[in-house]
Image (cartoon, rainbow, N blue to C red; front, side):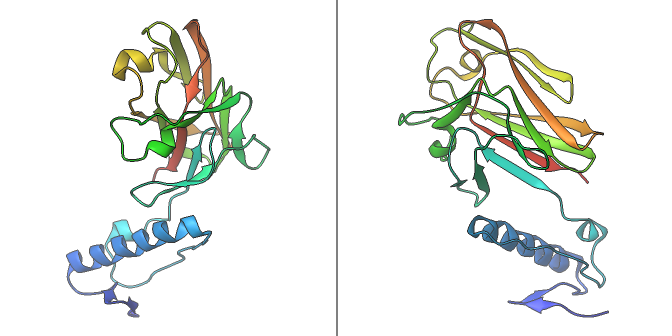
Length: 212
């Protein structure tokens, strides 16, 4: 085999734990570089790597709904919001809104202080397969649990039927939900529909991560 060593990272060290740590550090480097526009493709790292380390790199898309580009406290990059165009990703409708109020339950206030109201759908052009979908929310406008009720569907499957941010965490508090969806047509569809109450759906951030 061939040894790949950089900054003390020996990817074919005889100790499984050393190899795994090296791969984990390598991927952390990739994540840290992404906010600066780096596009790093890990091809084939050969050697006696653990099977998990030989898996294909996963696809991740992350939208700061209603906002600009943002890097969270974990070093993860969130791209500026945009309208959907075939071959890309984005929302299909709605209005960008914002606040300067502090957000409880997070160190990433900026990810929640901007949001998209009535986004219709978020669509992501992706390879077919299974995806983890993470949605982030914060409520700044309503004062009752029934004032904003949302139905959320992923690839036509209802994952929330009467979702109320206020009922779960009240106002000005971060809320995160994760779901799974399976894509068979090359586009991941996440739909938000008003299902009662006075106010339309909202979402603060959307991320999709391809599953191995």
